[in-house]
Image 1 (cartoon, one colour):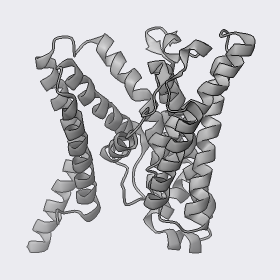
Image 2: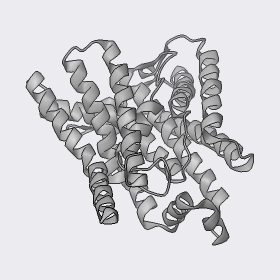
Image 3: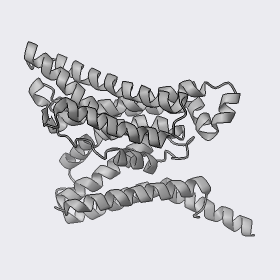
Image 4: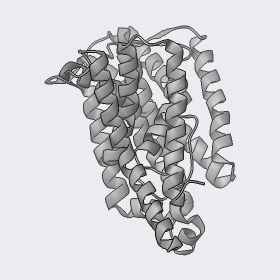
Length: 330
């Protein structure tokens, strides 16, 4: 009897985890719709999607690392440094050739991806080969990347749009190029995680790394690839975000990892590894986070409220993930 009741309670809690995010999302939309008549409009919905897109790329990359049971705290700092490097290269190109044409986009996106991927490779090597704790390694990397970026820019404002890189202005109908890029990568990585041998191996590895290794799965190689993808997506998200705002300040993207990780977890990707997918959950997770930010902005809320809300989101994400992993509250 007790076992049956416990099992029933566990199932109810897991249903709470699976559908809780959607319930919260609907509730937020209803609340903000009543507080501001302009919230529930097509224009604002597109704005939320555009604001979410750079972080959506970060969530796509973070999904691979979280599936391993790892974590990358350096995502925000990676976004910053990759954006700085890409902006400097675009600035140099524009000075020599003029700020027009497609080349600023090629240089910006390419440099963002490559710089981010390099950071991911460094993280992966230290974590996989030297057995460093992911949290400590990526926390240390956060300081290193931020410092390098500030040395390059001398902590001054780094312009981006003067090089001709204005991704928000490139649209397919009413939809920005940034949104299209993010959705394409989300679809690609969802397919990669769910329907490929690599994705299945990553899932098995996240559930039991040692057992996966004994079955012949290349666990170290898989982990290196996961951290590289995570870094590359953070880098790409960084330069696209910089293109949105037009310039890079010394605290650009600071704390973005605390939006990316909870959004991924709210979307069903477990911090314990071996469970989750990019679509639709992780997409809903990051849109939820930005919907709350957008709604608070339209309410003209106290800026310090954002910090409180971010903390609450992290708490809810971790609590729901713990419930789902253990099947009960403890």
